[in-house]
Amino acid sequence: MSELNAKRAIGVFDSGLGGISVVRAIIDLLPHEHLIYFGDTARVPYGSKSNETVIRFAHQISSFLIEKQVKMIVVACNTASAVALQSLQQSFNIPIVGVIEPGSEAAVKSSRHRRIGVIGTASTIRSGAYRAAIRALDSDIEVTDQACPLLVPLVEEDWPLDGVVRQVLESYLATFKTHEPDSLILGCTHYPYLKSIIQEVMGPSVHLVDSGEETATRVQKVLAEMGMLNHGNGDPGRHNFYVSDFPQKFEETASRFLGRPLDKLFKVELEVLESYK
Image (cartoon, rainbow, N blue to C red; front, side):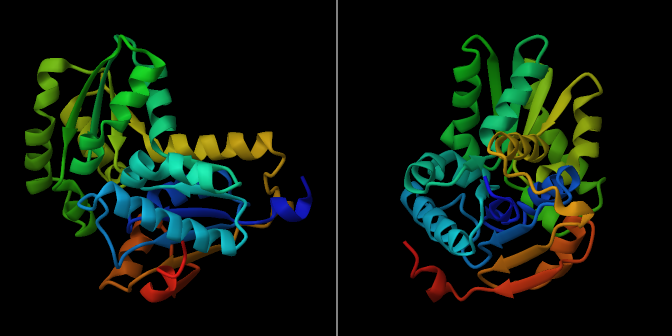
């Protein structure tokens, strides 16, 4: 594969802000890669949309990213990974990876007693995507899942990691007291920001699986196999961020999630996005 193609950006998209955690994991692992991130902030959340609508949105964004000549696409949204990944892979001729399979594989590998827990948004849990992915790897593993719909707004509003956040987590995670998983998949890209307090509530014996980190490892593996890693001659990657709306505090919150200021932030008008098929 040519050096020119290796220097193309990796496209990453999510329904909003959460996928920034995947971007951060990729930057940490592959600092020379260029990234183009798209957050569909005008149409968030995806979790309340029909599968058909999520698939349509995912195709529009993927077409937008491919027009930017990305070399691969990362579906950083758990909902879109659950319902649209297969359709995207069949429709576009570049590598497209989601967050569910890498997280599931890591959980199966780390589970000593073959009991895995999954937390996610209501739509992700309802889809059964993690359960199916885990069972495909080992049909005898016991899977317990729990929807945690309040966690996303608590993360985005930057609530202190005590008080209300702890009470909400203790309520949601109580279901695992009976089933006692030894691995817990953080099945939403917002949840890594709560990793420390989730670990406290679950206890030190439970291994937390960050799907974003596992997805970054998968990205590295796929690009290496294709000879498309950007070694960058020591130069750091450049990162552009696109959104379909400028919600209040987006840049501030995204910068907090990323751990540094955004390089460049652009808005794509919704009618332009909807013109893609």
